[in-house]
Image (cartoon, rainbow, N blue to C red; front, side, top):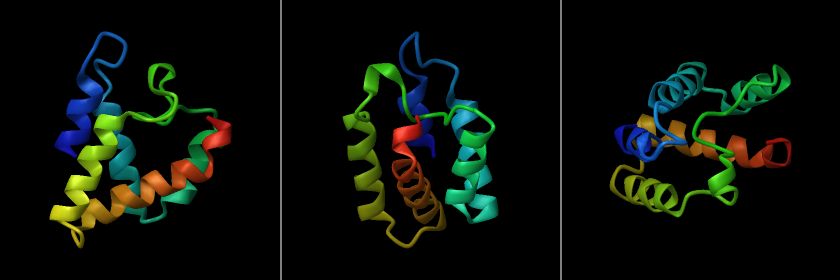
Length: 97
């Protein structure tokens, strides 16, 4: 999570988002249903912190690399599994971002 928070904390347009990203991640982790969390946020017209930024419309290549490295190093870690689930859920609803 610290790596993802670092990625969103950089730059004037993305600064200050770390807490929102962490809250989003914790919601996914606690419910264990990333798809429902993402769907619910989109239904309420809430943003998905860490996703859909206009400067990184196709995703941030730094984040992709860091997430891959984390998954390689900790493939069975509950936070890694939750993050992968969250990314897949967001990709499912990408057309709605």
